Image (cartoon, rainbow, N blue to C red):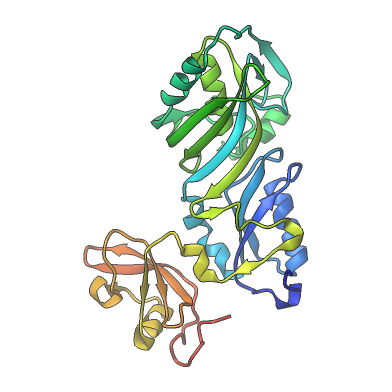
Length: 306
């Protein structure tokens, strides 16, 4: 059973399985009411028609959302060959149709494979990217179209398979970097095959290690401990003296922190509570990117907990 709002953590992470018809902002607004906490934000916008994993930062964990945004994303959806739309997905108006009945499965797979790796992608007009201070989807609703600069993204995996009983429709599985638009990938596949295509039934199945298996409906929220938000990053554990130094935001030697590699590192106390996120700084030292713990962390058992 879900915890009652008053029993939920004031700081933490919620893994939501978003329904279709909700904007990411709608989900945040509803969660603020359910948890009676105004300090909630999301990591990685999900289109209203799309469903699946949406991460919510609660309380002080909102300050960690940029680390979650950087995690790779996984999606499933369906590419419909032969029809182009204004929004590149099923929610838009049809702008062109093509006879693509002669296209083979092998050709579709080759077109998808050509998009794997580091590519340049132009954000669609219905995206949340800002141009001259205005979001593209706002301009699109006003009937405006502006030039968009292509941006580098990485597609780690792009697998397609025909949907039984639906000629010209292909199930797509995509793993990609943050900032990649799957609807644009679908449109690019159609264009590469000499016609056009759009995306339908998009579902985000994972953000980093956060998958649908632990995602919960919005009315069944569960707020996880702050340390869970950084579980995809390397972590270090500090003693009570180190916890006090971290709580004061001190720059520390990597040896003192017990860190190696490039970071960033989640810094935990002996109880496993998250104190801060540290990043490499000037060679052999690390500095705090975000401090979660109070300044007196480590002065008493459980002092970093909330």
